[in-house]
Every structure is written in C-alpha cells, then in structure tokens.
Image 1 (spheres, rainbow, N blue to C red):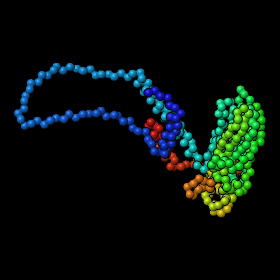
Image 2: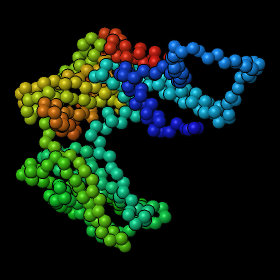
Image 3: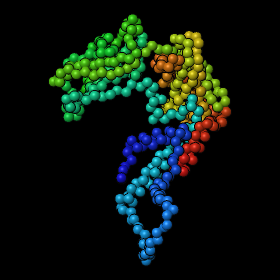
Image 4: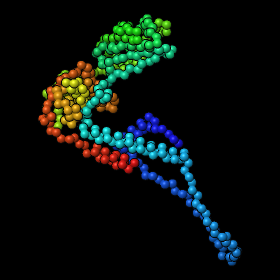
Length: 387
C-alpha cells in the first residue's frame, strides 16, 4: 500500500484547491464501518403442553480477549497515510496563502514578475523542435513572430536546423515554404539562408499575398517547410497559425490622471465595427525595464473609433515601489463575440507608449477588498484547519 505522491497527485491537489476556493467540496467526516448484526428468528410456541427437558449447565470458563497486533506493513501504511494528509494540508495552505495575497489587488490590475509568461508574451508562438526520423542527432523547427498573424501584413518567419557536437550539420541542397489549407497549397516561396554555422542554420521566408489572396485565405492555416538534406533525402515540417482580419488598432493614448486609488490611462482605438472591445497591456518601469503591473479594461464602442480606460491600482503599483514614469506595451485587443464564437483580435504590433509617473501621495491609498472573495478564503481556511 506504500505509495509515493506523484506529479499527477500534486496536480490533483491543485484542482482540489480550486474547488475548495469555490466552496464546492469539504473534507468528509470520518465514517466508522457498522458491525453487521443478525437477528435470530424464533418460532412461536404452539399451545400444546410444553416438554420439559433437563439442561446440564457447563461450568463457566473465562475467555481471554484476542489482541491483534499490527504488522510492520500496517504501521508503514498508517505512516504513509499520515504523511499524505500532511502533504495535502501543506499544499492547500500554500494555495490559500497565494490566494490571500492576490486578493489584495483588483482583477483589473495584477502585479507582474519575470515569471508572468502568459501576460508578458501575449499570443506567443511556441515552436516545437522535431528530431530526425532516422535518429540522427539533428533537429529542426519553424519559428513565427506570433501565433496570430494579420491580413494585410507579410507572413514571415524562419526555419532553423540544429546540429550536435558529435556530428556537423549536413548541407541543405534545396528548401521552400508553403501556405497550406486543408492539404492544399495556397502559396509557395523559396527560403533564403540567413545564418550558417556548424551547429545551426537559419533560413528566412516571406509571403506577400495580394489583397485578393489575403481576403480569401481562411483563419486556420499551416506553414510547411520542405527541404532536401544531403545524405538524407527530402524532409518536411508543418506548423499551424491563425490568420485573422484585425478588428481594431491603437492610435495613441489620452491624458492619464489619478482618480481615487487608480491611475487611469485612456487607450484610443479605431475599430472595424461596433462591439464590446477588451484591451490589456503591461506597465514596465522606464528606469529598469522591469515588468510591474498587468492592466485591463473594456468598453462598448458604437462608431469607428473610441476609447478604453485602463486602470492601475495603487496597491499593485506599490508592490515594486515604482511611481513611474512607465512604459506601456505588449497590448492585446479583442472584440467580444456576441454570438458565442471566438473573440476577434486586433493588431497591436509596434504599440509602445510612455506614461508619466505620479507620486504615491497623489493617490487615495486605500486597501482593495472584495467581500465575496474574502468569504471564500475564510471557508477555505476553516477546511484546512479541520483537515
């Protein structure tokens, strides 16, 4: 019965922690298994004369109670169970501590650090390096600037092949890139050698579709690299990306101002059509270039232009004790789908702005609090204490 808590077990604890926060699960009380009892049925006596039979009573003997000693295996099992409970309690306590820390900040202003990958790399393209099917020590990948590329702009990226210390890279005799949809080639270009080292070769490709071609290409596309490798024959590699029509672009920032505990930053947009637009971005220190706060906002825009206000709460700004000036960059824009489909992105490439700083004394320095979330935290702590 001895078992080691695996990575999957830890993941289960994290899921359990989430449900605990939601108040959906509580630790069950211990249940003592009932001892089965049988009832002895008695036949009713008939009204006939009873027959009296002499009964011989045996002398009473004392029976010593049986003592069941726990085996070493049972003791080890109990020890493992106790350790498991302690690990669960410690993990839940860690979740509760992090949750309590996050409750100090409103959902529209989240402190950042160097590990906040998703916030700092919106729509990041994550390449997958493929090894040679022959087992030779070479690998290759396609790298794109983003997982979402926009109509009206070139589709470009690189193909990279890597060697190993044990064997130099073989020569690539021919290489091309294709745009693929439903196994059909929409466009093809030859790649250009950009870097040629013993351990790495980099080839660049650029597609410049006409407006008519760009409009006809569907959102879900693939890029296929086909190359002839000396001594190994023809090889290929395919990766996916989204090809979207931009729904909005940023034209600039309005005048920032302090309002209560928040720094308000107006973001001006031009939009393709009316709808609810959601904007997020990251504030960086202009002095150190360290990420400070992830901020977000939304606004319904009825015309072809409008403004979305981003708010940075003083509690989040004071995490790094940086009162500015700031750099606002790594934007995301989405038009909210009103039909239940996927939200539609806007093109934010190149959007980088400076935001003046303000003394923390200008803010209304009041702690942020959400009563509903505090009640969830209270219930979670009660469950952990009773575990």
